[in-house]
Length: 212
Image (cartoon, rainbow, N blue to C red; front, top):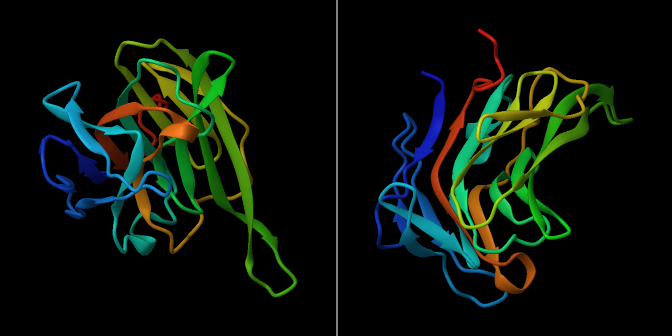
């Protein structure tokens, strides 16, 4: 009912991953900026998954399809042998939210940053925007972790293997609107390192933190 997109990433080959959600918005490989290579298929938590050392998977022309949500959960299973570098994106809608690694020392933390439509307006009368987020962790290398970024209409949360970390809230009652693409992963070996993503899902509900 609430699912916006569900990418099992079980294809194991090719350059397209099907969306099992109601919108059926398949994502496609995009080459990286540094090495000009694509994400590669790897063993997953279940069946196959995608390893990102370069390249990404994008949903072309996603536009406003995932914008303006009053609640949102973005989640995936992730694996790494060595902590990814700063700000390696796991799932991102440019200009709206990003769920990403945030390395602290040798530890891999998870950060969820989002942009909400704020009550303030610019001199031109356009809606203002507010930025906020949450950080949780650390994650252990060499094992799978379930990570999620959640927005409940008032505050952002990071949920790692069921453990909730609350962040700072931002004024506004819904997420921002942006023409940017939705993306799974973003590889750049020299900048981010390597990591694997499996079972990516986006939902317009605050899973894991809603007591109801």
